[in-house]
Structure formats: structure tokens, C-alpha cells
Image 1 (cartoon, rainbow, N blue to C red):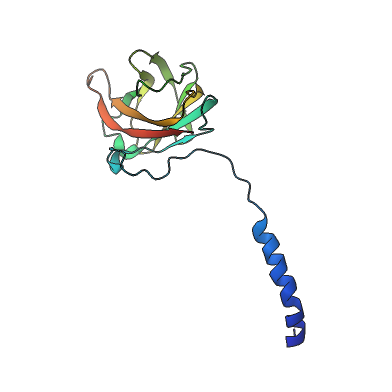
Image 2 (image 1 turned 60 degrees about the horizontal axis):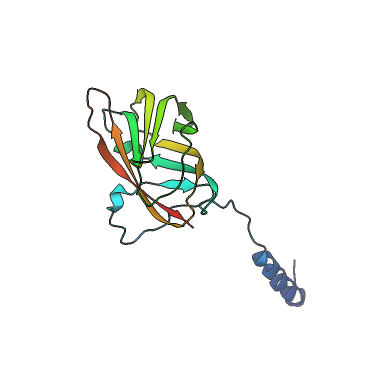
Amino acid sequence: MLNIQTAWKLLPIFALSSCFVTVVPIVTKADSLPGFTLFSGVDPSNQLSYRLDSGNRNTTDRYRLKIPGSKINRLGAAQIQITYPDYYKGKFDDKAVEVFVGDKSIPVQAVQWNPAAQTLEINLAQRIKTKNDIEVVLNNVQNPDGGGMYYFTCQVKSSAEFPLARYVGTWILNID
């Protein structure tokens, strides 16, 4: 058992060692996350989650764009259409697009990038009917030279029988 005199002698040692413990920085992966957006003009219930591997201007990046399963209704999704603003000057690699539901990769039939119309259409090999989140992964994206906030809009088509695309939400991407 510790007596009072010994405790008082050890107190400065404990105090000093606690300072060293709190000074040591914690190393974390530098992901760019959406954060909290005020006054975006997009209803908070329509803001979609995303993650950028870098998020820095003029670099090759990977975008992980999430679509909540609750936004995909009982009709499902056969095509995912992403539109972006005309002032976004990045470049997409249409050969490096992946779609996941959980950890399961979903086969992609075709990807059509139309820079003139600012659209990226992802045609799936089969219709996704799920309540789980869908993640669209855009690999080898060349971020624009200028940083800024870019609104990427997501629409989903259920199938050829229902050719109208329905609005799912908006990713508000921030490039530093």
C-alpha cells in the first residue's frame, strides 16, 4: 500500500508523464469527408455521403459516392446517372468505375461519360433491389486544377420499362 509521502513524491512524475502522452500525435488516414454544410441550397435529407481519398486539386483521386438503400425504392436501380456542374473540369476514367452493395461487387455493363453534357451514366448488368447502401467508386479521377465546392447530382432509372430517372440526392464535393 502506498503511503502519503510516497504518493506526493510520485505526483510530479505522473503529471509530467501525462503531458508526454497527450503531446504524441495520432496518425490518421487523410480522407476527405463531407463534413457539415450550411446554406447549401440542398435539403439535408437529400445530401448524400461520400469520401475522397485525396480531395486535393490537380491530383489523381478515388471518389466513393454512397447512395442510401432507403433512397432506392422497391423498383430498384438499373442505371445510375451522375451529373456535375459545367465548371467542374476534372476527368473521369470510364473504364475504372465500380459499384458495390455492402462488400459485394455489382457487375457494370457499360459506363458512358459525356463531358459535353456533364454526365456519367453507369448501366448495371442487373437491376439492384436492395435496402442496403450502394457505393459507386470512381477510380482514377483527375481532380480539377481549381478547388471548390461541386454539386454532383444522382438520379436512378429502374429499368427500360420505367425510363424516367428519379432524383435520389446530391453529393456536395469539396476539393481543396
